[in-house]
Amino acid sequence: MRVPAAALSCRACSPPVPRRGGGGAGRRARLGPARFGSARSGSGCCCGCAPPWRSWRRGWARGLARRPPAEPRGSGAGARGSPPPAAFCRPAFLQLTPEELRRADDHTGRAVQSPRDGRRRLPWSTGYLSLFSLQGRKGFYFHYWALFDGHAGSGAAVMASERLHLHICEQLRELAGSADPNQMSNAEDRGEVLNDAVPRFHLEKAVSHESLVIGAIENAFKHMDEQIERERASQHLPGGCCALAAIYLMGKFYVANAGDSRAIIIRNGEIIPMSREFTPETERQRLQFLALLRPELLGKEFTHLEFPRRIQPKELGKKMLYRDQNMNGWAYKKIEEDDLKFPLIFGEGKKARMMATIGVTRGLGDHDLKVFSSNIHIKPFLSCFPEVRVYDLTQYEHCPDDVLVLGTDGLWDVTNDKEVAGVVMEVLTSYEPNDPCRYTMVAQELVVRSRGVLKERGWRLANDKLGSGDDISVFVIPLGGPGNYT
Image (cartoon, rainbow, N blue to C red; front, side, top):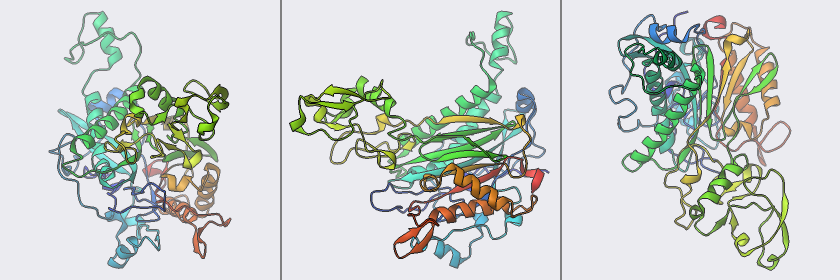
């Protein structure tokens, strides 16, 4: 099956977000730009992947594209350009009527939007696909899906949805245009130079191709964050966003997460985590260590130590449980004057906050975020670097029911991994393996169940617990590839 190249735009897998706040009181505004299976604005989507590449060098040098791509929109500017972000619009593949557009903007009804004709508009499961020239070489394919869950404004999420893939492409292009570093090192030992490359260093360690791709993705996130910082004033980019991206390249999935969105693989009923949440709790030791090294970042208002509760002045001189950056457990210490300051990390679970302000510790943007009614900047504690996990598709035989699920925290707040896997298997078994709509229906069912049903006491799940009041966006990507089952 030959798949046409898509325009160089992120809308296929991460359309821009509406400029509205979301969630209930006390929540971070949720403005996720990728509304695939969204309880606010979007569709349940199934996404595909290409057949695996056998050779790194052959894949880079020769490429696998059989025809040139459409001219990328905005390709002249590239990742370094600064065209104004496009105005918000619903993804074209949703084929929404004017009435459906109105319903999508109604946050009270929280309509779940899905493509009406998945066979015609989503023949390849809505996967994002681009082909890029490599300085005279033939092109290569990589596939890209992303969810951007914004907070405190939509600007950062909109820009990331339109530019992050450009930065990833630029970093991968640099890899494709250079010699294999391990071969270069061996050539230097023999006094040779490969492919007209200029020897720059001698490698004392073997560098795998996989680690090069991981580094390229990490660098792309860094450059994206720097671009948001440079252009935040001129482009009006308030707030920040969590970013979860899946890149399929040469037989492997690279899942990059910076924030509290998550991804899992469901293979033959087995659940394989492909990411983890980055919150004040999960990154406590990193945050405490930074605060210890740079106490000026705390503004004389916070202490880097963690206590099970706030310390009262009358408790000075008494013993209290605590833990610092080196501890996993708890121990006792005598309370001192400095311990009366507000803890750097306070609360637990979804209520945990850093500096009493933010509940995520990795993401893009938030360059102007400060502690309320102070001049204490929070950005130094936030990391834009994602954790990248790799799944090698070539190591396993996959059936039509094996999928990768990407979801924003609106899904995972009320649905655990086992429940998601149960919904996936339940829905997929009710459709024929070659039905192209089956993955879309899985995504839709995940969103509907997490949202719940509107009752007198609010949105309720089947067990009568509170449903998710957050935005919910979901990708369901078949691991068998685009041509095998659709």
